[in-house]
Length: 171
Image (tube, rainbow, N blue to C red; front, side):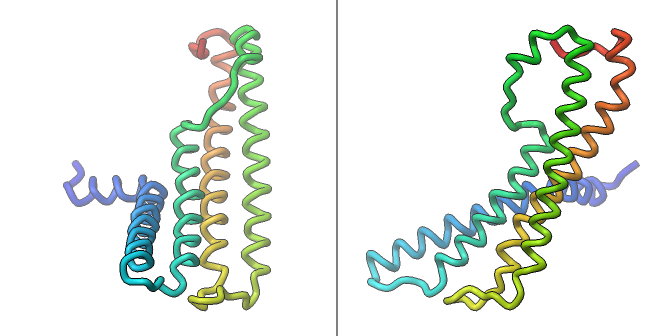
């Protein structure tokens, strides 16, 4: 039996990408509103706010995309796939999931190369390293690649049932 603290910890760990995205969104909106107020009412801007908002945007978009990917919330067009019989659909879904996993692993690698090659490059106003910005990209693609590999393995395990007609393939 899990205690309340263990359930809360589990809940938080399973939703880290959503929580990171939400925190970045709240930060970006708050800083934008404060900067707009200071610009139009107090006639000055907060130094480096654009750079901080850009960092928040990267940390909002990429982990958020991973969270949506994990929940399979991204759009797909099944018009052609729907024309195939259930067995054909199962094979096409597996091949598609494998292709997505390959592409996301490649993007993870490339974003890692980008992160590794940043060097000493820093932002002008805040003097923050570009690693902070680029790491949002790497984390998002890493999570999506991990989720896609899990989905591929799940589809691969379910393939024999779907091919035999016992798997309840999606209509």
